[in-house]
Image (tube, rainbow, N blue to C red; front, side, top):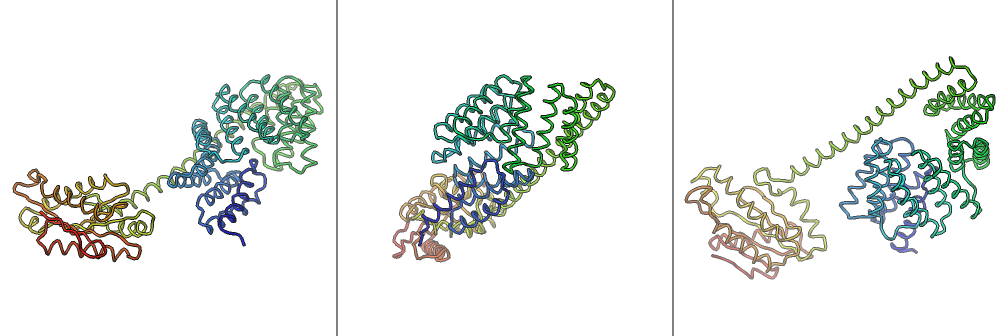
Length: 526
């Protein structure tokens, strides 16, 4: 029978196996991630539950649910901040970078990629460390900072090589080569692509379709059309034999092959590739491929001397290109708006929640907050824990003699003195229970220490200069102090503090009475 630690170790291993499926090809894994989250919650491991949620969010991202993913990752990252969980925050920021990239915000993508690397825990797997570094390099490249990107690509490659992660090293090199090509450095891209092929050959690994497509496009950019044809044909053969073809991959290959055939001067074969590409793209509704198909069809018409047809097709291309980018911008705007609306609603909810737990007059916490938080503190490890119930002496006389407005100002001033005392004790808080009655909660402070603090506070209230509130005003306070014990309930603790307060009132007011569970042992008075 396995114990909790064994169960956690098994769960972590299953979770890492999903986390390291960097391509996220298998969407059926979504249910596995959901199951892992539930298992983590049963074990009471919030950190692993959040990591399982990140895995789910990645898969929703792959399905195109950008706004929904953005909302999830924001919640997950906030959980990571509250619980000081670097593993959760690092992975959340990596996903957040991908969301930002899809929204066209490359500056935000770079910022989140940097945080994903900085926050990654030292115990992260080698594969995770490599991938976070590689995605930072991708973000730098997309931000047109290719010189800095090369440094991080090289670091990621070195890490992968050192840990003998050849498959991951190839993925890094593929991304690197593609980014060099995209940023307008075909010769640098060629050098990286050659290293990619050398690693595959040395370790006996097959170049996948994505690798071969990148290589083919690099050949095209460097004018090596025969090599490009061979690379594309190998990519097609790989996908057919492995069953790894994605919805758009064959259409992309056909488009690349058409460019290569045109470069060879084989216009007939180029047109045949374009016809197949168009048919497949229309069948699968591949709008992005169809836009680029129009551009290449125009080039092919021009190469055959059919300039009028080329001109008409170029017009179609520019119209489709404009509409495509307008549609993309609108989609990005909708996603950003959806994320903003949810964030705004959450901020409103948090603000209202905070307001509902504050006393509107003094700004102190209220009874609702006390009812929620005091039991948590009593159940937690922060013992000793002491509470003090305070009451302003003869407060009705102040209202009657000076006015209710002056009485309110007195309450606010006393609240300020209580807040100042709380500032000297971590996690302490003051609350207004109602009328002129207040509560001070002091985690980590025993009854003797609390008694001394309350005595200083009592003297501070009595000796305070009240002249700026009302001439001739005098204010004193009485307090009852009680220390929590393992077998005492919240109601019992407050009842004991109340009893001490009543004792202070009975003995003449303007004094502090402390209860030490064994009986009333200490009294402070003027």
